Image 1 (tube, rainbow, N blue to C red):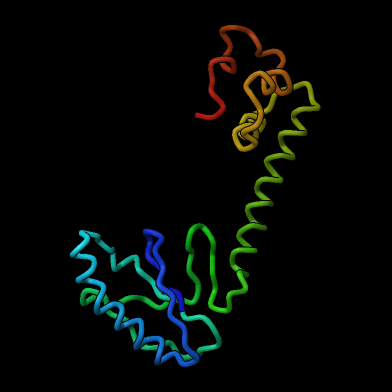
Image 2 (image 1 turned 60 degrees about the horizontal axis):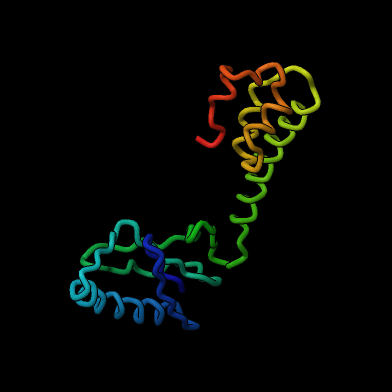
Amino acid sequence: MLLLYTDNSTDLVSSRRADLVVKKLQRVFDLLPDWLDKWRVAVNVTKTVALLTGQQRIMPPKLRLREQGVKWQTRVRYLRVQIDRNMRMVAQVEHVIHQNGAARTCCTQFFECTYRSEPKLSCTRATSVLGSLTQRQHSKHCAPQHRGRGSELSRTSLYG
């Protein structure tokens, strides 16, 4: 069982039975407000979620923190990683594949632009994604006729 806060703190409770996990975690939730008040820490309960891992088919009753319900979810995003209830990271793999496809499309447009003489608008977008290209390399490869001192390209920052 993972309990996730948006400020990147985590509480892990484990047991073979879901009802025991809920009891243990609710006990922590009951003690937590005093500790939070003592150290002047605020928790946004509406952004707090709980993830029950394993083959549990029936979701246990809602946990309560500061008299508000904590949502149970089957998939959460934590530290930019998507975690599902089976801990197989299927959602994360799908997300990475999707992002890779978008980056590949952008790079393909850039390299097509590099080997042609005419400049393209998509070439400018690709350089901001690639990030390793400097403005000089961009001017050299993508727009040779725009390399003058007062040209639009020489004044435009690729990273801003």
